Image 1 (spheres, rainbow, N blue to C red):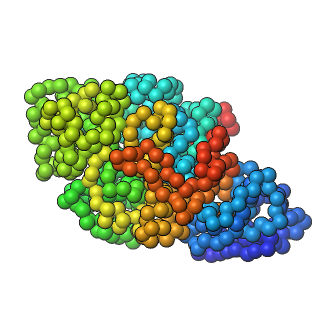
Image 2: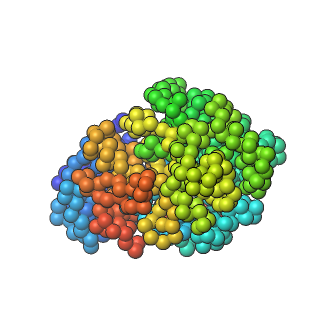
Image 3: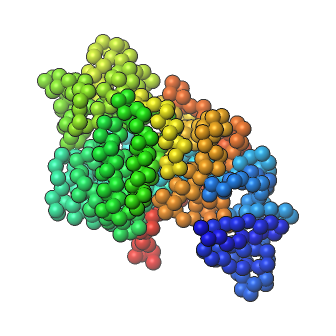
Length: 598
């Protein structure tokens, strides 16, 4: 890496950058951010030395232990903010500010980026994104397979029960419409970026039938993908374990990924198998990256089910080998040994094919129920991810949340316990719950081992994502239980795995949470504490930060995060949520301004 110098009054630092520009005799920055600094501080650099950098800031964070997000060692220093940008980093002795924070003994880091936040709907319900900002999350990436847009009338009808329950009016059709709603009405506390989901495109054009797309249908899906990329999608995503993504073959995914590639986008995936066929599934990820010519990332990397425990080192070795032959492939994870998804994912694939109404009809058919129970007990299943068997049956599946309030009595119970309470086989209980909740129930499944979680976490190619939407201790999002990853993923890593167990260094953990995440989705103005970057900043106490939420008692915020800034405004102050809601859409590299806005 070539280096250039950045100087602030009284101190010198080395920062990455291929070229540099003199603003005056004491202030050097990479040329790429010089214009931003000039706009913020009035320092133009022409002629050199004619002006001085500002010594007055809107916010001055003083005497913090600065971990800048690059992986470099921490140093004690100050951070000055002007407007929504970082204006200076270093020793800012003598500077004044409207707001001054003493960060002595606290870590000052870039705001954390959740690589699978799942809050695109939740922020419409509660714009605080409470459980996320109290972890230090300032930006979420979302859109796993079925994204928030585009949608049509049929898809809106399919989601009507959920929208009605939470009081959300479905008044958007395109990604552009959704982002307009965020900016004009929702005003979330966090920044939100999303992929366009290949499964959503398939559902829009084909529905949830198990068949190949016709050439005309594939062209329609590609046109929708192109529009979403121009409206700001970060790239293409798939969730290949679930309907309807599961029905897409390699050629369909590559064709859609090539559209994303043309716009500079990336490919993220919940891969087709996380268990018995994981190595074949990895080969599919590599093939998509190679054939579509774009970076790829595997969401929530795991080796699922007991027969596959211990395979994580080989999974990581195969990713390293793919990179060695020129494929830009990485992964991310959440730091827990249990997963979560819909209860209906415990059912065989053929039961879920065709959509909700067809699934419910099959579940009501007595003859088919016997077949369903047989398939759920099939240890040799290869056509679908049999998570019921993989979790050890009813003992390993816990009902975490429901939409139907009459079923809330069962939340937090295993399916074995629910079966006993209902007086029936746990597999019948699964089917009856899916019917009663119209497919809206979620479960937590025991399918991983701590050793594999740790092996992935300490690997430099693996980043962080919660795989859960924002939750809250009060309001509509507090009605049901949830996976503790929604509440504690980032503090759990910083407390348990960094401070207590020394599994990885503080600087490396924060690199995973910040610059690594930003780089994966081409967010060039976030993820590092550097002048000219957006002022997304998390300040926490390294001695006390930890997760509180558990599987049995999940609805608790993490502790130790003291202050959080999003776009220069403080959404967490002294550990409490403020009234600030400065979040914005973060758009991908293919974004084009609408014609009426040019």
